[in-house]
Length: 188
Picture 1 (cartoon, rainbow, N blue to C red):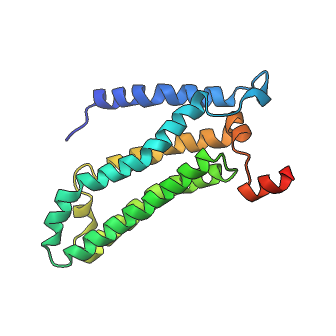
Picture 2 (cartoon, rainbow, N blue to C red):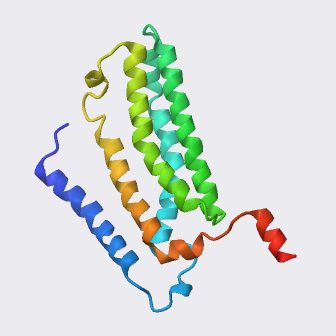
Picture 3 (spheres, rainbow, N blue to C red):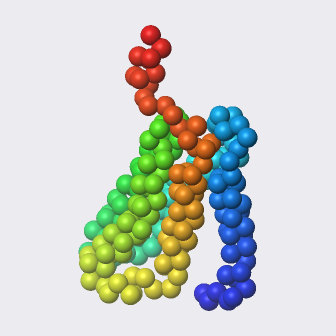
């Protein structure tokens, strides 16, 4: 599938405009910074995306089932499939940990979100190396077609949100809980 200049213009418009306004509003100082707390504004969009991200990973696994069945018939195919599924499940666990920390308003959420962002290219590189090594296929064959577009777009898009997480006053004011034990001890 070839992308024309118009496809890229549409992508830039659909992604670039909201990103521009997100970064611009995150950098503006508020009249009442203490009032920016909780899931609202741009943080609500991030929260929705974080809730949907594990579902997307599961959907990707489900969509790969037919390809996995074809790989199982190849020499070392089962090993390739189990490794890739294991890697995807590990990434899914990371997404769930980030989601739970977000829902609990943990002070660790920004750092975990950053780790999740770094895990996108890491998982892609490990997966590509794994499949190439186990099946004895050159990397350029593993990366045939548009295999690089989705992870690259995901990395860039999540990177914009990572920048928002570290610049936003609302994020700083919302993710303040240290732990359940710390809250119990301070209440008594």
